[in-house]
Image 1 (cartoon, rainbow, N blue to C red):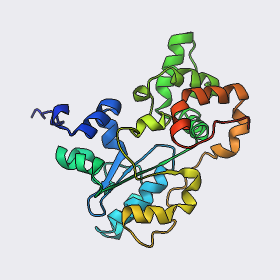
Image 2 (image 1 turned 90 degrees about the vertical axis):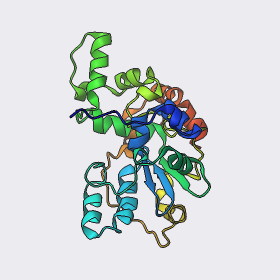
Image 3 (image 1 turned 90 degrees about the horizontal axis):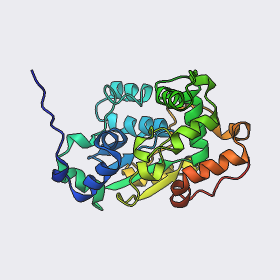
Image 4 (image 1 turned 135 degrees about the horizontal axis):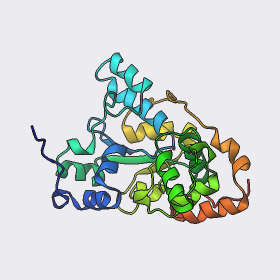
Length: 262
């Protein structure tokens, strides 16, 4: 049996959806947008910015409508989009309804972001330092420019930054993609852009956005590289200046001061 390509034509999408898909791609919009039609919100995740905690907490609340078994699966595997997600995904909605989710005042749209240098270091320590699949394109790019065969664990932060700073946002891996571009700022209007550093004090606001009174801190996903405490071990003033240049729009639009020497 030949399975047809049923992705919607871009011309069928609403103007906001169409612009967001043109900027970041249909796959990224689908993967990172988590919709609740019941509670009328869309949470757009930024990888390496508390997304495990957010998906475990909000996903657990959505899954509770199906019973404790699914809640447990969601909280055990918040990143498993195939077997555990209780959210509606963009591809499941008619274009008109998806456009409504992304534009209507009847839906709340929010995200959690992270200080760019800390987020970059976290991605580097986890994905490159541990030799995960995201390290392969980095190693290949370095081989293409230097001719050296290099193990992921031997890639320096400077070399890592060489590769990703030369990439357009759409071509960057989502774990270190420029956040303002990833979120479609200027295309999608958000009701709240919450700093990960303020998440502990933001659950009341998230409760309002998700129409779930009494929402409390429920950190079901605590995977952490400890990047924030390791900044001075990895960043020189020159490297921080490169981060500031590479992520200039993030610093300008997400409300973070430019990084200074750790």
